[in-house]
Length: 189
Image (cartoon, rainbow, N blue to C red; front, side, top):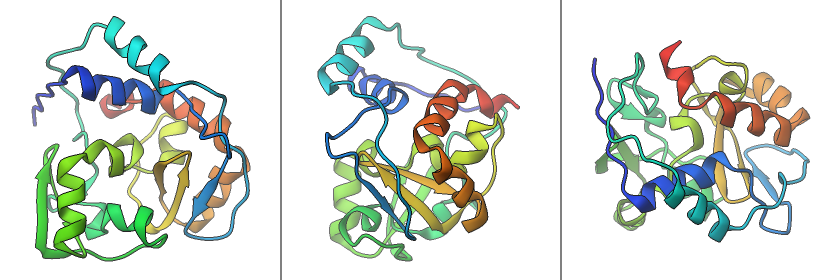
């Protein structure tokens, strides 16, 4: 399967921002289960945007695996990505409220959540295309359990299961750094 990705300057800025550890000054970590940790090192959004502008965007790139983890074309096993941020919990989406983005169909619990996502998918989409964040930090890809999640500095991270998530939270900043170094090249493994 061949995937063509086109990035606008804004999308590239968001990609660089997602690959550059940031902090919201509170070092907050939201989670599907109890966890602790602090946010990664400080970088301003303006600096990330400047860095993105200076970076030559790759207009087309082919990967061996899809950019978004999806089963039968459905991203996140049907979980509503917006609900992680608005409700602070995993919520199963419905096919009646769907949106196609980045090669996958995303489900939502409401039309309002679907519309929020459609207006700014990069704000709500999980890091690393929704693949297991810990696996990406190890140079691999893996499926996810929508119940094994964290929001770190305003970004959604999913993991394979609770045991893997427990490994992830042992060193969130270090795992994010390693995963950022591996993404998106890990899609060619």
